[in-house]
Each structure stands twice: as C-alpha cells, then as structure tokens.
Amino acid sequence: MQDLIAALRRALGEDGVLSAGEARERLPEGSGAQVLLLPRSTEQVSQALALCQRAGCAVVPQGGLTGLVQGTATGPSEVALSLARLRQIEELDRLNRCMTVQAGVPLEAAQAAAEAEGLLLPVDLGARGSATIGGMISTNAGGNRVLRFGMMRDSVLGLEAVLADGTVIDSRSKLLKNNTGYDLKQLFVGTEGTLGVVTRAVLRLRQLPAFRGTALVALDSFAHVLQLLARMEARLFNTLSSFEVMWQPFYRLVTSAPARGRPILGTEHPYYVLLETLGMDAEKDQEALAAALAEAEGEGLISGAVLAQSGAQRRQMWALRDDVEQLHRYGPAFAYDVSLSLEAMEGYVSRVEQQLRERFTEHRLYVFGHLADGNLHVVVQVPELTAYDRVSEIVYSALASRNSSVSAEHGIGLLKKRELARSRSAPELELMRTLKRALDPANILNPGKIFEPAR
Ligand code: ZN
Picture 1 (cartoon, protein in one colour):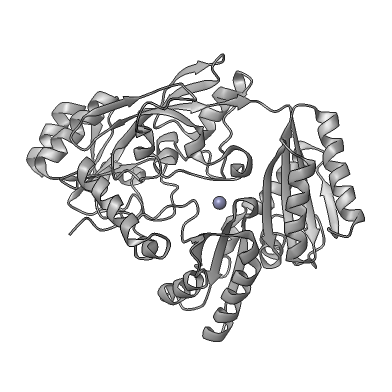
Picture 2 (tube, helix red, strand yellow; picture 1 turned 30 degrees about the vertical axis):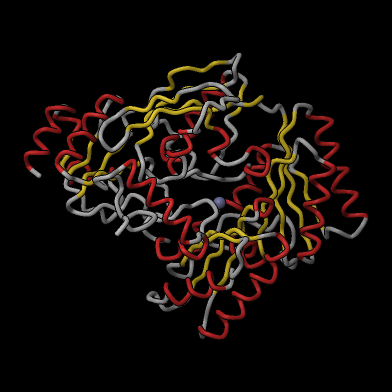
C-alpha cells in the first residue's frame, strides 16, 4: 500500500492524495479508506486507476455522498476517489440545447448555469446542493420530474468515462440520435461506478419554463388518486411535471410540531397529492390548472385543493413533501424505495401495514413518493433497532410480483445487494457479471457493490 500511495502522490501531487485523517470530512461516515484521491483532470483519474489496477487495489468512486444505499462504503484495503475537483462547467451550447460539465459539478450549479441561458436542466431532487452530476449519472438518479422528463439517463446525451485500466472512453456526443452500434454511455449510467468512473457529461437541456403552477390536493380514496392522475395527464398534457403523493400519516407528521410545516389542507383526508405544471404562459397555465382542479372537484374526485398563489406558497407546499428529516422524529427508521404498478399500490401498502401490526407491538409506517412513476418511498419505524431484516422481509415480500422493483431510484450499493435477486432473474444477473468481468477483470472498481463478483 505504501508504494502505491507514493506512486499516486507522484501522479496527482501532494494535495491530490489525502490521508484518512485529512480527508475525514470528505469521506462517508464509517469509511475505512486509508487515502482519498482528489484528481484535477481526466488524465489524473486515468493515471490513478492504472496505478491502482497494477497494484490490485480497489477504488471506490464518490460524488456528493447523498446516496442512500452505501454505494460509497469503503474498506481499509480500498482507496476512495472523489471527483470534487472536477467541477467546471465547460460549455453551454444554446443552439443545440446541451451543456458539457465535469463530474464533480453539483446539480444546483449546473441548473443555475442552464437557467442563466434561459434553459432547464430538468432532473431535480431534494439533495440538489450536494449531489453531483457524476454521482447522479452513476446512480441514474430520479427525483420529482421523472413523469415528464425521465430519469438522469434521459438527460445524458454523451459522457466521458475512465475504465479500470485507465483507458479513457470519450463518448461526449451532443447528438440526440446516434445509432452507431452499442450505446456505450449506458454502461456507465446507473452502474454505480462498477464499470468505469464518469469524468464528464453532455447533458440535454430544455426550454426554461416561464411559469410553475403548484397545487396541493386532498383525496378520500386511492381510486380517486388514480383517477385524478389520469385526469391531470389528459387535461394538462405537456405541462404536468410532478404528481407526488403523501399518505395521511406522512402528511400529519410533516404538518405537526416540531416540524415547521403546518396543514395547508385539513389533516383528515387519507391521501394528499402535490402536483406541478411547468409551462410557458403564466395566465393560461394557471387557468388550465385551476379549471382542471375545479372540474375534478365538481365530480367529487377531490375533497379539497389549494393552488399556490406565490413562490412562497409553492415553496411551503414542497417543504412539506421534502421534510424527510421528520421521518426520524421517533427514532431511527428504515427507509425503502420500491416500484410497483399503480393498481397494486393500495393493496401493497395495506399488506405491509397489516404484517407490521401482526409482528410488532408498536410501529409507524410512512408512505409517500413519486406516484406517477410507480415509485413509493416506504419508511418504517419500530422500537427494535435490530429489526431491519424482519422489516425488510415484510416490505419486500409484499411486492411479490414480476412487475415490481426493490429499488426504484436509489440503486443497490451494499444495502440492497441481498434483495437484488427479487427483482432480477438469474440470466440477468449472470449477464451483469459477464459485463463486469469484461470491463473490470481485476475487480478493482467499487468491488462488492450491487452483486458479488463471479465465482
Ligand atoms: Zn424520491
């Protein structure tokens, strides 16, 4: 290890290799890494990986450390690799509506740069201040606007990545259409740094909306939630961009002290939906949203609605949905991120609720999430801190369908490795291992994440 560290210092410079002590604040909690690498360029990433592969030393790439599945956990014989110094916005191409950024650029900075040119980088999530573009590509991040703009994958036109042996793959195409053989960039999207390290990306931008319409709606049955979604998709075609649901216990949690939020609509309803439109005409769009809600109310689909009249009111509504800190109010809680088809959701949540009631003397269940994407966040709090496996079994076994996923947008990392086979078939897992062997034969890139290496 000491020879390798000396070689890395020669390649990256003294300040490009921090000891664990120097890097403590920059490493994930509980990290066992002896050093943190802070390369300044793609070339330095390439040199570092080549040196590590030759020494047989594992490398764990990290972005903004906002992941939730221990994707950057590092053992004592592993080296952590941060892309934090690769933080330049290299180009903003207004004509072709795209931007080229380095991997360490935080989402918020990329969004602001696009906005300054009248353009929108549509992917958005609560951790926008720290989450980096490279990390979001490696984990194929989702968030609040997937319904309209897709996941991170759908905003990546091209990228540059470094393979385990240091080879730089420059796939920085700006083209929307490019059917010239394998779409190699996809090897690095959502593969959690196990096949290569993303160093640059070309991101697709859209027209910056001139108007954001936001409404909070209360509903008295889940059937009405589904009908409302279909109705809003039809009435607000091309502008509907978020359709978030909160089950009553979550809504009550985030609207009661010590939470800062207060009920915008009474807390007696079983479901609340936060919906948002992004459009170009403030007057017409606000009218269309108001009309669609009035129509739904007239037909008894919804039991109450508040349309945000100002930016402050809009932020108040989103603050409720985003106040996930409250989930730990009564002690540590277990968080899950599942996908399932819309018609299965209501039954799924009641199955989980019933099993928790049967197996624990006390429990709290909070459900919320990106309903239109089929993605629910399920958070369970029980007094037994060691009950993670038992709670997980309840949450995952209730999925029990081919058309479901144990991880909608958070990835697998270490945390969900054991559950992967619930959502993927044996031939699928074997194909993943074949790809891993082909791209990283020495198994040095984020080893042991997602799945165990081939036997
Ligand atoms: Zn989410």
